[in-house]
Length: 422
Image (tube, rainbow, N blue to C red; front, side, top):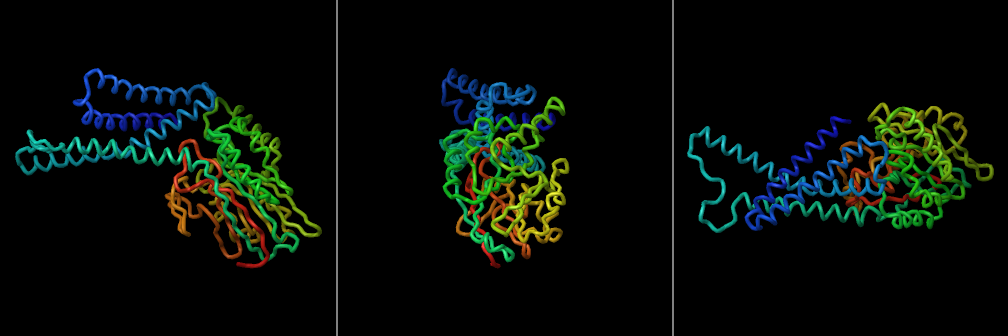
């Protein structure tokens, strides 16, 4: 983790150094000495403040300036450097091309020629043009990211998905299930918008609600500010939940193992106090008259990262053999093909989240694309393998390392159970 922090610091300094060169070319000769000095001080002071906070946040236990301050610094850092990265990349490519040209000129023994326009010409030099292009190019991701933070991050979308199950008991025909996933409460900055999303879910009046993991980013205390909002998530037949990879405290550097264990205890208690039935490799039977279906839930299990393989499907499945329909909550969609399909062929539907649709992509007119599809084969929407289904929810919240959504809005899914086959 320390090596990662050092590498991140070096990368930030490199990006800023390149971006500063663009400022130097474009503004130094156009500003007074005093104005240029002030611009330079402001530029590097912002870098110093952001890096200082980043290092203190790592080594000082707890959020020493509070969760809101931490969110502000993380978002500011993200927005600034995602914007600067493209401009710095252009300048770096120009440096590489320039050095290659110099090398080729040397090898061919040709006289050195100026790469910029000859002296005395009034047109913009090549370096000034590239510097202005770099600065302007930074505005594009800045604008998109700002839109993604302020608009799409809380632009909740209700998606409706029928599920046709051949063994569905007649009394469960038309049963509705609401699914939300990946709340990541520590990333939120707009309680009013979050409350609006919860109200959208409740207006659908689902019979059941499933939450498929990642209530927080790092520690259980993150839910406190939004506890009263999510406590309103109720359904006539219950709210069932599972833990996601972030809920175990794996992404925080703890002072000792006892604090990490205490955090997990807080997480389990949070689900209980919310009124959600947390399934830890367990199952529940839901009855309507003489009919029944089973809801199973496992701890997080994915093909990436053995340290986060907590779930035990065999325990969750135990004693459900008599239920004609089995619905499984499992946070990571890679669990489906790794352990569910074929091996537990009578688990009808698996409900997952985890991928967030990478929070960036395209999902319109029946076409969906995101870079996450190069990492996860099943990453958003409904998938089928013979008579088994997987649904991957795109997430209600967003990760604090990427606090926005662009083309991949947050999702509330409403399922309707139907008898028969598609």
